[in-house]
Image 1 (cartoon, helix red, strand yellow):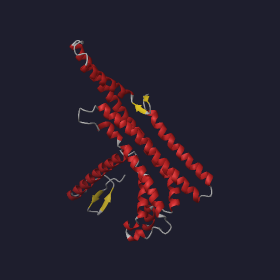
Image 2 (tube, helix red, strand yellow; image 1 turned 60 degrees about the vertical axis):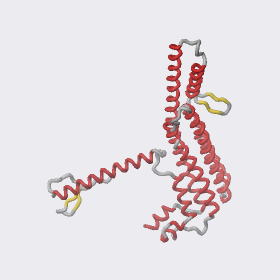
Image 3 (cartoon, helix red, strand yellow; image 1 turned 90 degrees about the vertical axis):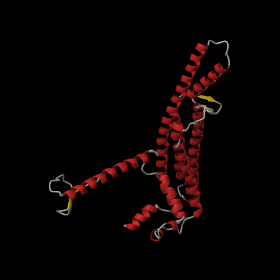
Image 4 (spheres, helix red, strand yellow; image 1 turned 120 degrees about the horizontal axis):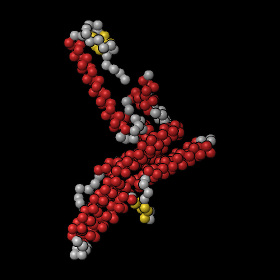
Length: 305
């Protein structure tokens, strides 16, 4: 961490000691300015770190780096001329570049979509009373589980395509196949383990039903029955009390399910985002070797030295 140093115009120097006795008023004001700038920069860094953590807790996403490199190799004209000359584009195959751009863009889209569900579960509910909140949450859950499966499938398709392409140019084909099979199996395991954070639930066919939301729906239906029927046979006093109890229990069941799915989505984000980053970090050398490209940033940094 860079600590601001004391400026002394008399000696025309900066020092790290804390002796302010010999400073002029101008020097003192200048040091106050430097200190304020330092405090502001630290606050900005905290905001930046918070923003990074909200996307998965990593300060570097390899999917963004790789997609960025593919974009530059597909369109090197976007670089400054002196940097453009440093890229060797004589051996690249633009068809392959575009193919992996599409595959990784699909993964990124699916990943970013998954990351939004924390907010959906927490805040995305209709203002109209024509749709119950538990119905909206159930809709979010069904979409979330489907999108999580799509995310997994996009990763597996990418690995399968890269396996086939790498195998064509490899002399150790058996090892290549085993390597990618292990990655695909690991992907399945990671996404299967996501389900272990779910509470016990009921299945109706292939549709997932959350236990608390099922309770909320049952109470909602019971309220409708007691409001629309038994109008002359039930004691009004006890009828009102019973409906009030059902409404309270319905709301509590919804809130319990909502809180659980917000926490679950947050934990799943950490797990799947971390896995995606680790996977692409390990796969990147094989991908770059097949595409005959290098990291644009590393190439330019080497040129600048």
